[in-house]
Length: 280
Image (tube, rainbow, N blue to C red; front, side, top):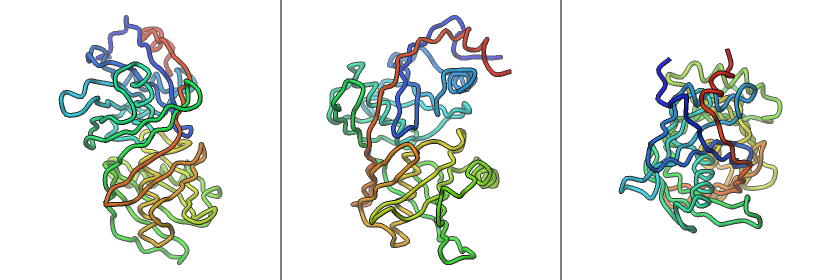
């Protein structure tokens, strides 16, 4: 096993979530603790590890941004962008004194993103919003029933948005995994319905490299963009994820994602011990 993270090291991480979409965050501005995919999988394992949807390293921005995000999904694969992940990074970065709120920039594999951050009523609570860039809409895909719609959306990562009557009735694990399998490289799949109320969507999501999650930032943005193209919502959309509500603003050709973020815990991990206890 060729690990880029030495097994005799300890990692000091914090755990955060945005609407239940949870991440382990490592401050590593000196770039001395690269996280190997094997270590990322072990950390994210909810039975044999700590448990998370992904692992984020905070790196120096290298002159292109204030900070840079290095993100691995729960399966160890590299991810280009996460709307909730970058908001969790913001909370960890502010707490570590790396940046001063309210506004700073973060480099991602999808480009530089601007984050706005506002501390909440307690030390572990905050509100954060991120400029997500533009959504690129694929063609409307023909469906058998008039109340169903489908459209691919590129948010710097690929999404398939499916409009139907009630996401609660969908076998997300079965259908999401099956749809992901027919797209080369995988795809994120959003199952949505209009409402409750105006300018609102209800969403469940299957994230590639993770599975069903409690929320998805890029997925919420993709869903809002697709729903607006179908005339279901206006410029400001409340997307009700299972773990909480995220607000998506569609204006001026760009998208802004906003919502709460919470710090859950500080975790010290012995890498050797983690891998020794990893899933067989």
